[in-house]
Image: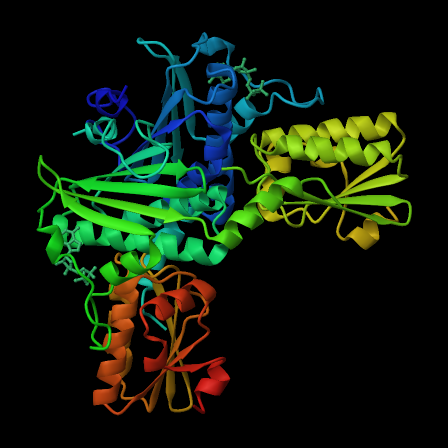
Length: 173
Length: 173
Length: 113
Length: 113
Ligand SMILES: Nc1ncnc2c1ncn2[C@@H]1O[C@H](COP(=O)(O)OP(=O)(O)O)[C@@H](O)[C@H]1O
Ligand SMILES: Nc1ncnc2c1ncn2[C@@H]1O[C@H](COP(=O)(O)OP(=O)(O)O)[C@@H](O)[C@H]1O
């Protein structure tokens, strides 16, 4: 059950963190009441990396949607399912990588699609939000059962400059 | 390294959660830059349990102090040490339990004491804050090396009533 | 973890005003749904949803608002959103829902919209 | 993770005002220490620490303020805190440091304290 933290080794791909352990690893139950604390952590983690208030709002939303989908579709709203979330900071040019894993029902990743938003109806917005927000998002079914979702978001040019500036600006009038 | 999540089984004591897995388990590096995301999670977790804004401020502070001590004293400010934090909700009468574990330098728990605050000087305030804030706090050295700190905080009578009220009040004018 | 969303309800003239406070996510969208259903039973001329105390809303929350709008249209009730905070605005924008709703700046303005 | 604390510095008459913004914890207390050292080198009559943009401070932050106060007393500089937010106030209270400092409500008031 604890394996996902360690199986990352030698499997991760994007960017400069090959083999690097995640800065923060979380295991939680598939309980909607736990979404708020995870959002709060995501927001502060992204702030530390230099994302703007606006982007942090969207990153928080995207992670919430991904977790809600695992709870709703993967675990069919049962609260005792396990979910793992790993958070990495990416350097050069700066960003974050978040990997979610679960042991719920696994579906063909090709079926996870955003719908046409012109057709106005409640629901079916989560995958759209995730794809629109992230620089990269990809679902896989895990060999041992369940799904793995990999999310990557790079800093924008503006956020990069802001973040560099806030360092040099320090203690200056 | 991942064991602490599971060793809790059959070892936990306080309250009603014998054998129960923590709602949220976190593993992070001993990097001060990660304190802010953990504080944010703590704050939102405590909010969900029904702690007041004032108490949440202190709980967040107490956990920050405990982590800062692990980083400073346990890992002597090296950033690559591992820290595990487990969060439980406690029912009847309502509260939280947070257990921190590390693999750093372990000290005799008797040496972890708050100092006399009348002697004004910088430093030496963390243990005082932790003891003053929490309903229970106890340090042990872990058999495998490192320390374990167990923190428990119960809702006050007022918080309990507020929290019960906010449920029945729902959708009422 | 039992902090249900509190939804205050009040009346101004022929309008019912609902004011939820707190984050609206999967764990709490049903509070909105219940509050809307109850308000609709009173057959008001307009239903004003004051979101000024909602700092965050996910797609479960957006879905309940779309449902409420559709319910209101069927019942010939004017449905107006008020006080949208920045992060909630982002959620409306990214899902292209902004144009769908009547949005007012203040409750006052919404009673006339 | 390289968001250092920004500390704005300005002068009002014979006072230097430092205004840090952001949480002050172990990762950022040294920014305060540096800013205080730099301000003291200018030998102002008073040093005002405007904490209105600091929502959170842990004991590392409190320690730098105690150091700053001691440094200021040795140098006969008046050291005044301004704009203490609720959570920072709690941190002062629980460590019984409140009585130690001269605290003013506004920067204006602090220039006369
Ligand atoms: N973690 C998941 N496990 C299984 N199926 C998923 C998962 N996430 C998304 N899906 C599938 O993708 C579809 C679109 O998801 P989404 O856009 O979030 O809308 P909704 O959840 O409201 O249906 C879902 O209806 C579901 O079939
Ligand atoms: N996690 C820990 N590991 C080892 N020693 C600790 C730990 N936490 C606290 N201590 C000991 O307790 C003392 C008091 O801690 P504290 O009140 O936080 O003040 P400070 O950290 O400023 O010295 C520390 O100086 C240290 O000797």
